[in-house]
Image (cartoon, rainbow, N blue to C red; front, side, top):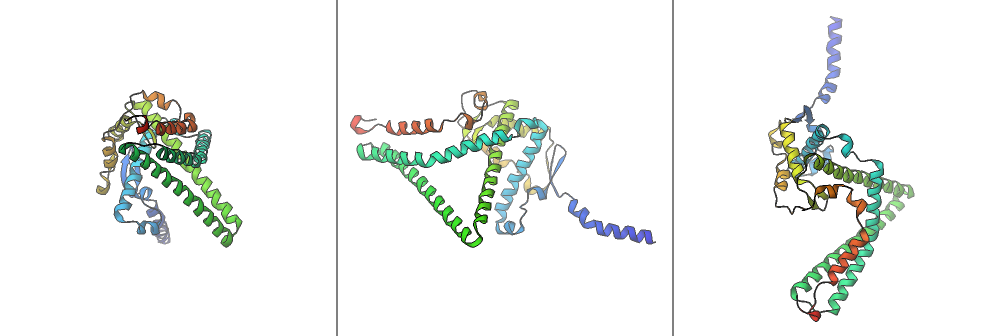
Length: 294
């Protein structure tokens, strides 16, 4: 009897642990279960502050990302898309150089466009084109100034309230955050490269870089066929709906072979100064009335 009671007591003590270890399964892909806890917002306070529709949208994106990550581990070589520290460092160096030159480039573009508008007469269409570009660069300049001023005020306030160490710790956290973001950018590029090498197809150029659209679509098909994807909760059935709508949009596909763009990361081949000079050249080449109509 004592042994039975001891056994029951042990089970009672273990029950919370067993329950916490259970997976509230949302989906299964390649025999891997994805639990609700993996895609839900972990901070209850933050979760309550976000509208239910927005929260569900975030969870859908997390689920889609988790499914594709598991599929990549099964369909691709892990080494093919895992960023190395050297690759991350090169990307961070490019980002730092780009940021450092951005203010100078913006100011020069503003000065050149202002001079063009003051010195020449343009057709209505070309004048608006220059004015819109000028307004865009002025907004960018103003935004950079506000960020710089806000950072200074924040640092001064933290220094007064918590001391210099608080400011030092903040910048260390910012540095770590930038490193994580850089890892994500490099991993994304390497993932796209691995997908293109496996599936081929057409590619496009977006702000986020080169995207192998046909390869994305082929991967989704493999996930459903080879991964035997099962979505167990009705609210998440349309997990890839937004992504597939994006894939089906009318994209401007690049005519060149994708191997050219995936030979080396764009941040290792980009010439920041050359791109800036090309932009200046394009604005100066806009026809003005003094030299003849368009």
